[in-house]
Length: 535
Image 1: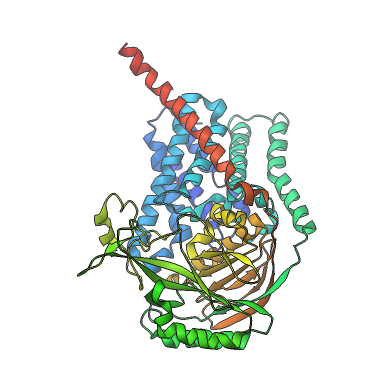
Image 2: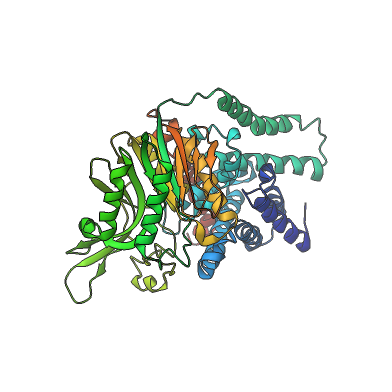
């Protein structure tokens, strides 16, 4: 079918709108995601049949993904106009390029392999998008189901990329059905095999998941946790208000919440907002005050976020900054701090950094980029990271500490569970975005981490939403937005690892290998006429 210019633009806009309104909290019409790609695939097919230049596919793909990016993550603007523009423009570009690669391989290999090209290339793109300098996997299509975890219990096998493959497969089959029935005018009776295949791929995972959801028995090893939500305005107060006032506020919340059975108290990301040297922590007044107040908390450990730094005699990493007026280097971190009941403490540094704020992409090659870092209070510029995923441990449990943005990285969390984490604790500060879909989306993604690893999860968010999530991804308790409050509840520890915990994003790795093979073969096909001409 040949589609005119006006209708091609309408189709690309329609795909972008369907992707947007099916995303959590920007419509939450989740099941529309199974039809969102169909308009874009129809126009791509029309461009191929009409033998128009391939650049048209890129243009229309960019329109679709630009709408998708703005429609779902417009709230980034509230934190940083420059960061928002970078996210909208660059992420749309990357998505459009991935779709362009699908079009290229389909043309060179043949339409018989188009579904393989479509699924593997896009899945490979998402897999790589979790792992490189411009990583921004917020809009992974598997994330759409975070608000209805009962239909994706099988993420314990596949992770979020399994959801992406599910979405892509159904959309492509839906496109083929549409083309056969409404364009080629093939009889419904003739297409019954495609129809039954479409229905089977759509409903079988849902049925399996609902059975898993109803029959899953959570491991029963409860501990009591206290989750603090101090509700300190990150823009006006957090990095301007005296630290002793904020620490006192946290301690008062803890005193009102805990019992003699509380195993751990959880406070938000950068709750200790004043930067300090880790090796000198015992000398700081806030630490002495915390240690004194902690004496009243019986056996409870205290887990919180902090802005920390370390001194190095030699450059330690790309984050090391030479000290002015003296030898040596300083490296800053967004850290988690565990103060144990036996008086010892341990730091762990955030590994997955927020672009533009905590990390300037490619600054290890182009150091001048550090000057463009976004100022959001606290430390700016590229921060130091842990070299690998780590866990923390107190007298009662081993847990996966996730700081803010880390909670959208499924494979990273799975690695922590492989290393012995029995529960997941997320500490975050989502107040930068205001009362928008952003903090709600961020919280809902934590539900997927619980399912993937069958780990209960407790989440402390400075301004909300703080919550406790069980091993099925159900939100058991939660707070309201922008309210000083705390939760007291139980999480069940679990040592058993899921297939996903053990293997991680194995589907992504497989998709990457297949996609690279397809692209290389396509490049070979594309180059053959040139070499034949010059031989």
